[in-house]
Amino acid sequence: MAHHEPEQLTETQLKYLRTERTKEMRIQMISFGLMIFLTFIAFALVALELDKNFIVPIVIGLAFIQVALQFYYFMHMKDKGHDFAKLLILTGLYFAIAFVVCFIMIVWIGNPI
Amino acid sequence: MAEMRYNVPNDQWPVHPEKATLEGRNKFVGFWTFLAGETVLFASLFATYLALKDQVPSQDHLVAAELYHLELAFVMTMFLLTSSLTSVFAVYHMRNNNFGKMQLWLGITVLLGAGFLALEIYEFVEYVSIGHTFRSSAFGSAFYFLIGTHGFHVIVGLIWITLLIIRNANRGLSVYTAAKVNTASLYWHFIDVVWVFIFTIVYLLGVL
Image 1 (cartoon, each protein chain N blue to C red):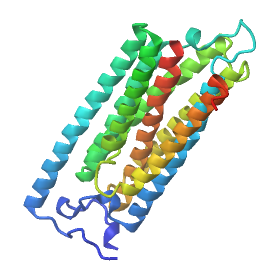
Image 2 (cartoon, one colour; image 1 turned 120 degrees about the vertical axis):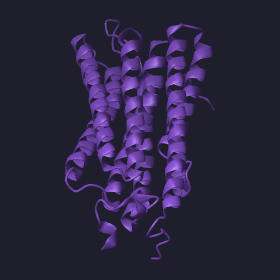
Image 3 (spheres, rainbow over the protein chains, first blue to last red; image 1 turned 180 degrees about the vertical axis):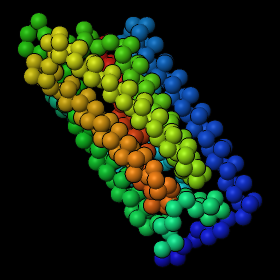
């Protein structure tokens, strides 16, 4: 197997890599801040005891945003070479949503068709 | 084998150490496949929980809205979310070939995870003492199975990362150990992903 990684990095390359990683770290910190913020909003909405029909979709939406941040930034799914990971996780999510919707339909809504 | 050298100088450390070897790349694809399977496992538990939520045999059994404490769920969320960030720090230092700091942040991740686990055990003990047990109702079974499976994953993650810290303490960083740390960190993030849905669907929507 051909190895494309350079055996020895020059001083400039090292410096460049360090800056790139620091930049990425800053983005990670921002996404962490966002996650904390979204968590606060979700808990606050529920604690305020607003209308249920208003809160439920928002809180579930916030959860999906948080999970996307977690996958794309913390688990590096935004980086190159993650196509297979994306395919797998999306397939997993497809089944996950299908299971949940199916059970809620059968048990709580009943005879949908 | 040049690939197996430990504690190489910075200018010889690969850009993506966790994927520098064939084993590392295989581990990466294999682990994402495993995580997709885990997604489906937790989905079936979530579906079961949602189907059986508040299904209790009689009026004297407690239901979700009377059981859950939002404050506790909030503190647990903060513990796990922060531990997710500290494992990002660990991977950052791993890529920068900084073994000491990587070990330090992995250690902090374990401590935060242990804090989360302690709170979860406290919560379970509390619920059992007021009569909400695994066998008390269908709701109880579904609740403990879902949260318990997640808690089991936390225990596995804690043992895994602790073993990595101990095992690597004397030998340091190589492309071989880097792949291991990266995989453990992915697992830890996934535990947090599942928890995001648990605190939303079980706790937040449970008290409504």
